[in-house]
Image 1 (tube, rainbow, N blue to C red):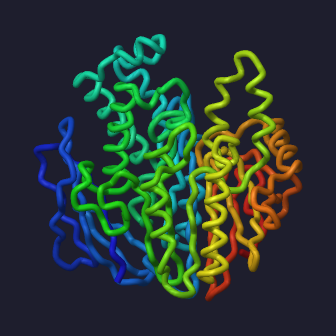
Image 2 (image 1 turned 120 degrees about the vertical axis):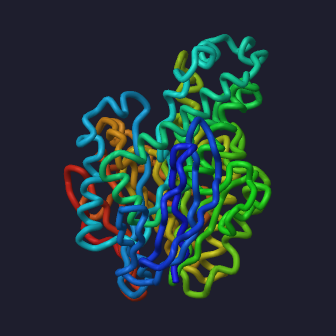
Image 3 (image 1 turned 90 degrees about the vertical axis):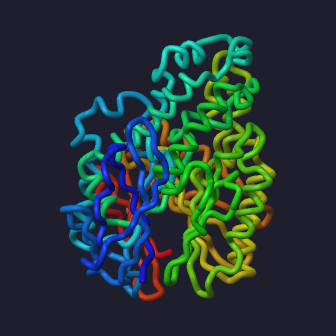
Length: 460
């Protein structure tokens, strides 16, 4: 049997609808939260582990593929939006790849949808209240002394919850997420651009912390489907105090692990002590022969960014781009921690004898990388983004040049970036998503590129 949780949102005074798995009985939901005239309900239920499973919610019928047998497809997506004008675009154009993903699901159902970060772009939060806008535009000294008022807190939280509902209700997105079980990990735009990489003591300011707390509340309800106060956490979340929200799910033949790279992030650290302790626990005692899909919201294998950081540091008015570079494992500020992350991957691949595949998004390009450990090759697959417009070709070529320079943080165990199958450039500047397929014990990956179509199989 497959255990599933469903999130349902109703008007505050309305009774929750009846959810009936396989037409048998009804599930009593748990109320996760009640805010701004709405109630947020979690239904926990089980479905048989095969392609013909289904459930009814009120008058609606939803088939679900819970099959993790010898022939299974998973999908990985990231960057579901853009910083400015996201919903000003024609929805059909915005959701073109969601439409394609739905068509593929109809031909052969996906058993799992992995969301690798930036499920929403919440950067417009700065316009949700006049006091928030004024604070954002104020001097640093004023920001440090400002108080995060109850009125500001309500405006920010309402913005986040409303924005999730708007995005999740869009055509094709709503259809797919009702039929395919999802697992999600956040990144900076689920909070706002660059959270954790800002200078000047930004994260210790009362308003910034209050905004993060509101984003965290919404993330826990809308992505993790759990109570925002940290009570009754699902077993998948390893830190029972909910300081770091990394999780692990075990399925037949595959384990999916996602560390939380935002809750404890600082300019000098990607994860804090809690996050690292949880990650080191999550990667242990994985069921024998399970492949590990390790989701790192920012790519663990990337180009030599230290060169760019050094140049920007010397250029007037270029420091605003340093936050974006500090977001990456490859930043010179995170080099020791990056090595620690790669060493952990090497350890579980070589000593625990598991095949490991890294999944990442964030960069709005498609690419892949390899990490040669002492005994095997670890593949990194980057798919980004499903809705974010691709950057200019010149940007992709510039990153490709930095990749050509090479970056090998662990002596004798090289990392390198490679073109996708059928492509000549290391980075592809097209919107995209990733399909992971397992036939018996053999795995392969295919990217769907918006203009170029489906890539040939990459055996992983």
